[in-house]
Image (cartoon, rainbow, N blue to C red; front, side, top):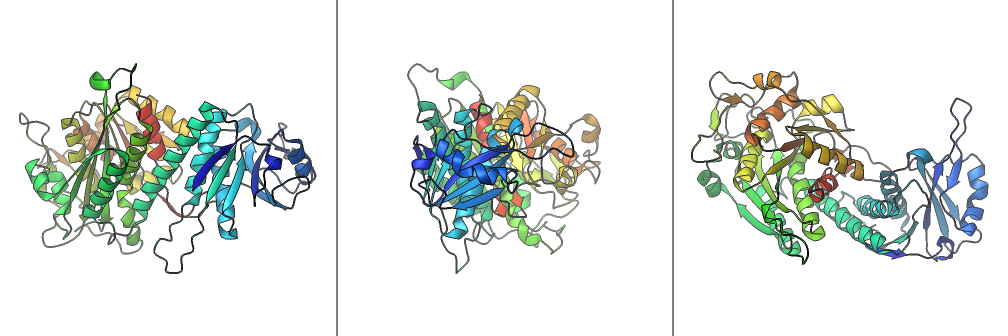
Length: 510
C-alpha cells in the first residue's frame, strides 16, 4: 500500500470512495437521549451531502458503524462512506486507527483499490497523533491471513490517501504510521505461518533477512551455542524435536547525530521473546482439539522482531538488544520428562545456574525465556521486557481484552503504561509477591516450572522474575490477544501483532 498525504478539500477529490467520520455529540443522559451524529468536517459540500442522512436517525455514529452513499450531490467522489467514531467526548487516536481499518476492510471485498480518508476536524484530537493512527489502521486493516489458499485473490489496497494539513509534524506522523503498520503486519505474517513453514531455523532466516534490509546487527545460533552458553533450560525444550533450536540476537545502535549525545552511557533495553514455533505440550501432551492454534506460540518473538524492525527505521536515540529463543516443543524419546531437573544458564562464572524441576513439560515458554532473560542481561541490557503467549491462566483471568502485565520496578512500568495509552492497546498490571514465589519452590531443585492452578499467570511471572533478578523488568503475557478469533470491522480474524506498537513507544520513551 502506498500512503499519500494531501491537503485538498475532501469534496473536490475524485476517487472511487471517500471515507469521512462522524461522532455522536449527544451530551444528554437517560433512556430518552437519542444519538446526535455529527460529521467531523468543515467542508460545506460534505456537510450538505450528509445532512439528510445524519438527521434521519438511520445512522447513530457508533464506533465503526458504516453508511454508504452513492453519487452524493456536490461531491467529486463516486461513493461516500461515513464511519462512526463513537461518543465525541471520548475521542482518542484509537478511534481513528479503527475507523481507517474499517474503511480499508470495507473496500477490499468490493474490488475498490484506491481509498481517500479525510482526517476529522476536532479539537479533541491531536492532529498528528490522529494522522499516525489512521495510517497504522489502514495497514492493519489491509492484512488478510489466507496466504495459502489456491484461489486467493489479491484484494489489497493500492493507495491510501489521507486528507490532512501538510505540515512537517503530520508528514513525520504519516511516516511513523507507515513504519509501525508495516512492522506490525510483518509480525502478523510470521505468526500466521504454519509450523511446517516456520521452523526455528526459518524464523532465524526471516529475522536475518529483515535485519539486513533495515540495518540491524543480527546473529543466529543453534545447538552448539546453547551448549556453549550452558542454556540448559532452553535446550531442554528443544531436545525432543528433530528441528534444531534458534537463538536469534538483534542489536540496534543509534546513528551518530550532530548535536545529540551518543547514548553510550545510557540504558540498554533488552527485548526478549518466546519463539515456540509449535507447541504440542511435549510429554505433557495437549488435547488434540485446537492444537493447530499452537503455531502462534511464537507470537512473543514475532512482536519483538516486528518491534526491532520499526526501531531500526524510526531510529530512536537509545541502544536496544533483542533475544529470541525459538524451539519446537515435541514429545519424543529424547524429550524431557515431568520430574526431570534442568540447569539454567548462569549469569556469570561466579555463580551456578538455577536448577529447575520440570513439573509439566507444557510449561515450556518460561524455560526458554529464563535463558533468554539471562543472556540479555549478560549482553548488557539494563532494562528488560519480555513478551510471550505464556499461560492459559492469564486468559481465564483477563479474557481477550487485556494483556496481563507484570513488573518488578515502577518507573519502567509507568513508561510502558503511558506508551500503551498512546497505542490504544490494553494492558492490566497483575501483582507479584513472595507468597506467589513460594508456590514455585521445589523440594529437589531451586525452583519448579509450575506453581499449581491457583494464580497460574502470576507464578509463571514469578518464575521469570528469578531470571530478571534486580534488573528493571516487565513481563507481558499476551496469550489472550495474540490471535483474534472473530473478524472485526477493522481487522481480520487471525494474528493480531499485539504489543509491537507499545514496545516501540516504550523504547522511544528512553
